[in-house]
Image 1 (tube, rainbow, N blue to C red):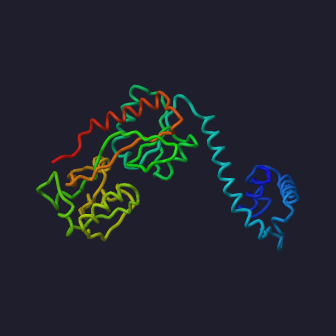
Image 2: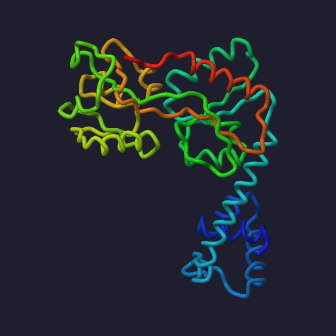
Image 3: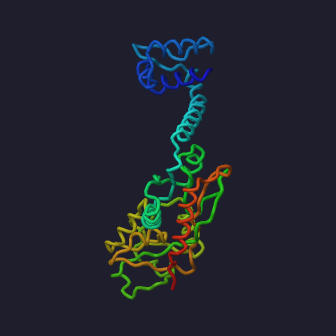
Length: 299
């Protein structure tokens, strides 16, 4: 099959008709029909049959589609990469980041950077660990900032700073405002559960298993932001990363260090064989400086 055959076959299979495929590919219907006929002639079997006025994929087409779809996704990746390289400007920085960094550290870094570089375009894209490598390969981002990411093939990791999980609690529940707590103190408290399957979730889960602790959790959320907002409503306490905690502080809540500490790394990721532009590297160095200037919570 030629590349054009793959495009047309994929379009017809996914859209359900020659008409829809032609609209999707921005070509004429006769052109799609001609390519399909040529493809079937080369393959030696029929891909679609017309049943009651509509196209139905044959058994051979269904089996073939599984492999064609893999190749089609690779073609899309190549096109995205080429487009991003074409549109890339020396005056633009694109950064992938874990959502927690959007509360405090990165807004501060952007504000500082733009004062001295008002003409630089900064594009921030929140993403998760499993999206980073593909985004780097397709040049959708210059670098990414993640919490304790796993090793990724072809990706270099640079330590930005060390941080920690902290306890966020309503001031009404702990009027003595402790600056340091243990997880065991909160076994009888209502704890806002966070459905985090990433490195921070694993970090907390392992500690709970080691200490044989069971939290009372009637409310579970997907994001640290929502957990912090629930704490502010005096619903319960939560274990949260320090960046999210600092970005959601108000007069109703406080945060305390956990003893023993639950430490993790904030890491910058970039492709092994791609050097950062000067402006991207300048921004990263600013993030490193600001993150290390920010004093950690201590007893």
